[in-house]
Image (cartoon, rainbow, N blue to C red):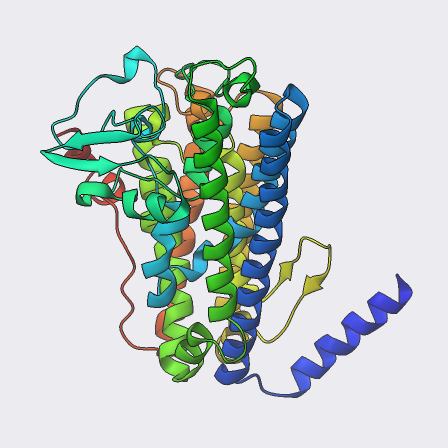
Length: 416
């Protein structure tokens, strides 16, 4: 501990002695991206191994282990989401791994309460696991082999975004099943026997296992693609470090858009306005509190240049905070305080989820206390976005477009 304290003190002194450059900040930003996607890949491989074990020997134990591996895999990935906005290479790729919400009837059996048809989605109850051959809108679909290639072709079928066939949430559905508890206690309750060929429940256990394995295989390969993109000579690294001004704008676009339009708006305020558990991010597993918290941690990381890897090692380096501190120490202090306040509010949500009630219960109608806890997180995200806009002006990076959300900008429109 004494050695660590000495090293940390030396690092701070060195940083203060030399002026931090935008180039150094962007190089470290890319290094953290690589580390986060590498950790996402490592945990996805662990998930894939747990899925192999579930398929080989279905049991309550192997199902729980696969679910735990999925939850662990979400931690580094959610902390990487701040790279999505502002980095076109990530934004174009992201839908393959984290698209939501999904019409789960596309994939597997659903409860009768789900419904039988949708005016917007011809694939609403396609259930490809149960149907080796399908005819939709006059087109015959060969689903006899649920390979990774087939799943990729099925993703966003009919150009409908809700047809999520791949990624974390497709896997989540196949591990938990639907959460039929509404805003009451309880998550999805898929039985392990859905994968037990000898004692199969809900039929098609072999095809369900094929689908799950193919989805897991795709997740690993997709994450490998992003690890490569953020390597020292990767395309994403080259793109963000090519122009210092544009690179800083990319960081701030990611921070602002994830803070405001995506997390505060689409993922939190919309569900709170509608009191709808279907609007929570990890709706099958009741893991939404953790995903939201890790998004907030990722936003702070983009500013302070710090990331704790899954092996426990903490990475630090030249940061946006250092640049702002050089120009306007008071603004850096303000930004840091806002980020800390948001993290405190998001931790309060996560702690409540562990000790009182799940996130979908918190947003339930009539739950005054739960609603207030979620709203405080939203307020923190909105407030920190105002400071992000001040940082944009202070660093003079040009025009930065921060994504909005009807749920924040025009709440009445949500109900039209």
